[in-house]
Length: 376
Ligand code: GDP
Ligand code: MN
Image 1 (cartoon, helix red, strand yellow):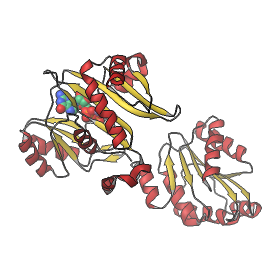
Image 2 (cartoon, helix red, strand yellow):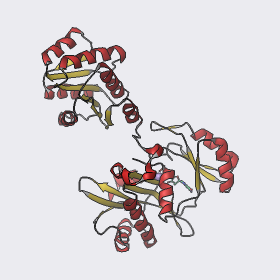
Image 3 (tube, protein in one colour):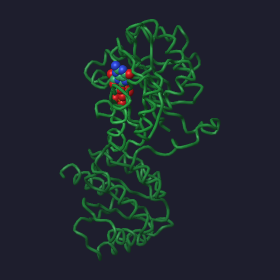
Image 4 (cartoon, protein in one colour):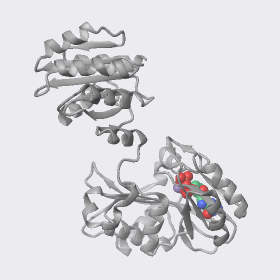
């Protein structure tokens, strides 16, 4: 579960990290009152669970309460990378001398946590990491040892951060451990002209598996943050968005995961994981297809079904009926095997659709879908 910036800010504050005075609202009029309380000048910040808000126009300085109201009105309702801005945070502005980047992140491949630190924080950090990786230090953390002052000094030195960041680095680790987070990121951690360190932006991902020991986690922030994933979850579908171009629909998590691998093996990238489960009714097929096709990145769709308890002809009927309600705009490759596969193929053959084709093997189907996606 990802937190909003204002929630991360509150967690940091609770663990003794200095953050700007700030309040959240969904109303421009209240934004004006908050700005007045905070001293007039404020930074108005879109609260969406995605980065790059500054570059998207979601972080703006307002000179006085009237400007804060106007700016809040502009930012509320704005779309930032598919996320609609529902609330803004108004923060007392901080003068910046330097911007640093610090985070602790779970390195799943290595099975441990990493500290990432750079003296070149701010909105260009991805660019820095891509073009000059040596400017971004990555320090593995021994979980048994954690981040002691000595370890924090090592991280600071590796990232070129001033020694005074040691205290923040230790506290940030305490946030991760005590709050059961998988990621804590501060970008930028700023040094003011007077030498104070302030966490100006925060990103925290909590470990959902630890929800049982955090009663106050409840509330609005549970559930998927990707808009398509949220739409799929609302329909009861197990859908995870990925970053490729071949939409994948299958029955059973194991089969779907293998399908992702086979698609990747064919030189294309899966656009999603979608398991329609055991009973692939027409409604589930239609819901699944419409979710997958709502992703503009999808260039072809691969339906891979192995009939077991659910017979392939029932799945085929589901696909045919789904095509009555969903306008198919990209090619669909269907592979049916297992229980009643021949009957299922006959159903699809009988309802010829110019964008639907069949394949008899999983490899053949993946190759065809990958080809259609990469030549589209
Ligand atoms: P992001 O773009 O989503 O990462 O949003 P941030 O909260 O990090 O804000 C983007 C950038 O706006 C920061 O890197 C700062 O350079 C700038 N910024 C944000 N808050 C302040 C502030 O209080 N004072 C100043 N001077 N700049 C700020
Ligand atoms: Mn930031």
